[in-house]
Image (tube, rainbow, N blue to C red; front, side, top):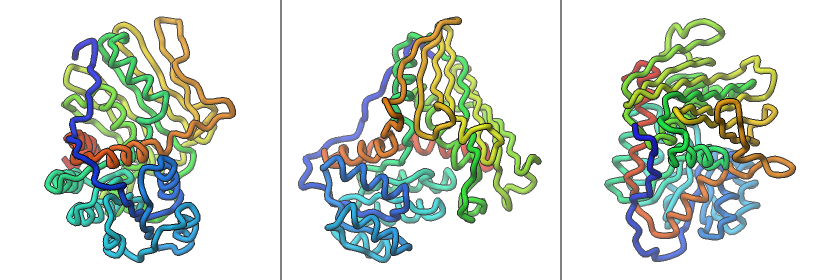
Length: 350
């Protein structure tokens, strides 16, 4: 790996936008509503229709988008002459719903994971390529100021050759919806839910090098995972060895006795320096980023006064800006397959 890793530019092809995009929202729970509000705040698109199995959620979302029509199903949503659909539904539905939207010629922004397996993810990316439609997934941590600062440090070459990366996401809580605990519906446990962000960020920082080896240790209730077809892990540790020799260590968990709400950290070590991204005081929302040289450190980013950097909806806002500019399929969508393939190997599927 070279000392300086170039920042890639988006390689999608822009075409003249014929009109202001009309968007539908499928799933408007707290994440779906947050992304709706972030997209609405850009002023670049019209929110045309809303759909959710819970009428109360639809009613709440309608307050943020009073002109939107209501739909009962995805098929009904797609009848509203849409240019794009934002999907925030349970994981088991993502691939099928994305395929249906893309077959209708509609661009897609989906919550992670795009698919429960590499096969599902590869099918959605292929469908987006065939339809020539913009495909985005809500890898929102890329859009925190701290992670952006780490990427600049790596890309600028000041850290030297990156040889070690440690990423952590421990959650003192766990998901309360039953489908999260069914491997057939969720695709996996804590690593699929939280660790997917870590895998994406580690590969993204290094411009998606080839992953040569994957080792994983999965456990549930403090015991090794006995049957991955019947149970999901609540604690996972994995090691990735990348082309060029960089070693990535990942840890993700639910219900850990962490002494705080969450432990979220990314540490990057190179031959000429190091850098870290860490949450502040157990927060799920506030982070610092620092640059290290031996025993010295300097701050790269810090939370805004009063806390709560508004990063959660930035990925959705970036997607709608590209859609409004007339962008179609972007080859960088293949990165989604790379992340899914690592998860398959972690879960002994590949």
